[in-house]
Length: 137
Image (cartoon, rainbow, N blue to C red; front, side, top):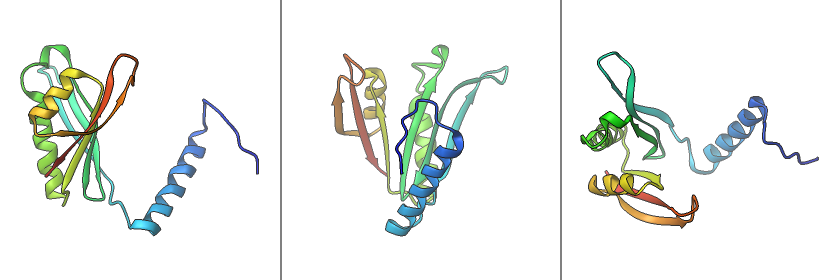
């Protein structure tokens, strides 16, 4: 066996790693029942003006991305996206949610929505702190 280092992996190789890890985890702790969860905000022209993308797995909602176009910011959409995603996660049997951010404005929005910090990485990126937040559903 020979290890290889690359910054341009073949998609099939990434798929093999993912499938191998999923099989290991299924045998170790049971199936994740991973399902995508997306909330979209469209403007009057039908263009995506914001959204939330994540998934549910092992009883948790993970919010991977939450973004709003500049004109939609400051109107409470982030909290509404989170509420919609959390309600769907609960319907799927989830008991918790988690998210991470290095943006101080987003951090305040998540805390306002009931999330609490459980960990932090200073200088990730430089000059900021990446905060990890969770919420019981």
